[in-house]
Length: 425
Image 1 (cartoon, helix red, strand yellow):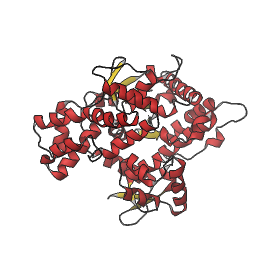
Image 2 (cartoon, rainbow, N blue to C red; image 1 turned 135 degrees about the vertical axis):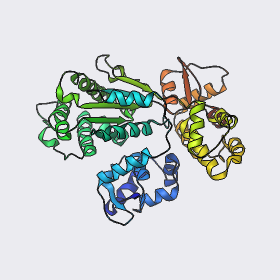
Image 3 (cartoon, helix red, strand yellow; image 1 turned 180 degrees about the horizontal axis):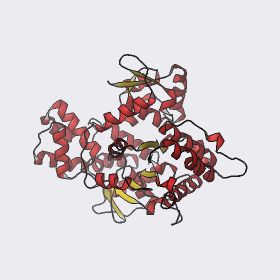
Image 4 (cartoon, one colour; image 1 turned 30 degrees about the horizontal axis):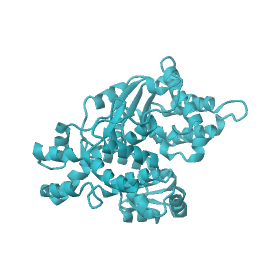
């Protein structure tokens, strides 16, 4: 049975205000950033039913907890619980087209079976981190593990600028994800303790025992905290401390940590307090030629190797860009590939919304735009300031070659060469 969600009537005004609060002058810009239709967004904002995944993604982008604002319903208009929707959502996502990148999946799965495990997954946005996580988590849930997924993008600016507020938000959010009632008031000592100690006590004496099984805690978009030095230092140091305690203390052996981020860790951390130099490091690569051929087959496209290579010349092995091309050709026929490639680096192509989203980000950061233009105009790899390289890589616009970078694909080189040259003229 397919599931849909709609915003509760008493929360409609709240979500509409969230659009403006997050800096979107109109709904069109938000829809383009999320790569969804304007009608889907309009349905969401006016309390009409939308697909579960769209509902969660829009809520996340607006900094809203989807569980707090949703009416849960099925096709028969009967209400269902959040737990049912979460389970169905996992099942639906696992049924999506997925191409394995051996031995990554097995490495993650085997690592998380071990007590006190910690894995770190790093890749630019839209490289398949979420699908990988869902796939691994579903396998662990089948073995009786409890899973809690928390995207740090849901934390608002107030949470990220105040250490005490952040740790309270973190504890409550993880508890909600596990379906465990909030008992924070019983464990939080405002007068004689610290936030880190109280947070640790809450997990050690309440959340982990209440879970009843090993807990896999996945923290997505962890780089969201990097600009907030005090919160980042305290939070990341705490994750490392929990990992170390899991080596010797029984209750902490039950916690498995998955830390997901897009950029390099550019904040200074004590080597003994960083979670980024322990555990298992996973970096998602682009798809190889054989993997792209498999992706085409899963889309029902019987392409020759030459045709696939032609597409990869434009977009490389980027999973999202390839997925969009195969979906387009699935609808319009393989003969549409030539027209697709011709229009791809323009505002008339299938990547127009995606490219405009990246373009708006660059317009807001002129130094980053200048750095990308420097890379695009060069005939060889370019060395940039570390922060510029980190940001461009996290956006997926450049590939790293040692300490130097090159454009990720021909699509970006062509599109941004024209736009940046005009903007910075």
